[in-house]
Image (cartoon, rainbow, N blue to C red; front, side):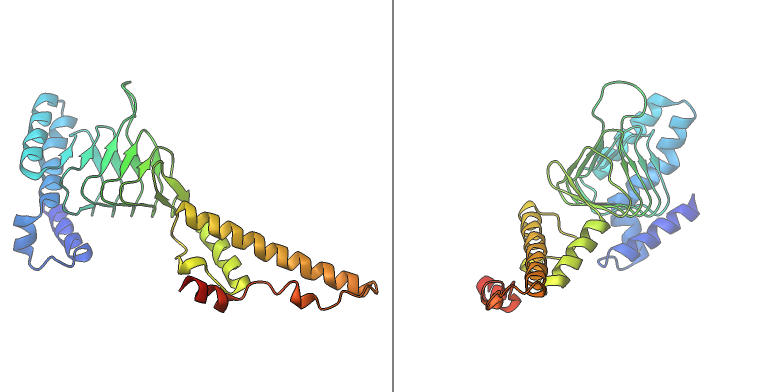
Length: 251
């Protein structure tokens, strides 16, 4: 138990630059208190069949920390709960090692039936403030869920989910967008590769289409010239994108 507590204290220093001393972390971090209360008391009682007492202990922990963790939930090692107020973790929820949850997160169910009805988080998952992960879905290792997102389907490992309902943005999507941006020398609105905004997605698709059309147009002109067809000054018709001009327009 004490080894786990030392790990949890060390994790706070790793992920919260506001942490200054071990005493401060031990006495002033409700996320640490809620995890210690769950691991040391509520969850062991639940597994031993003392259901009511485990629920009551969990309720007491919620009163003092503002964090509601069902005593039946499974929580891995080095999990960090930052701030924590308003977090709800359901009975069949599972949280993998090295994951991080911010305040207002819900790991909830979508069914009244018995059995597995809450999410499973893999290792090193980050759940932003106010996000709702609902149902017996899986959030893969290293995935991220944006603040206030509502996730109701599986999130692949390493992917990012944002929005209501959450849209999934994978590493392959990011690579494709960066490849297209490199082809035309411009990245729309200087948006980073890990952003999943619908307007940004639409702009990226338009840019992809324009780059592909330019390439096809250039190939067509080359074939016409090879066949002896005079195409005139094709550059006046198909200049393609001028990144500097777009930057000036947006600036």
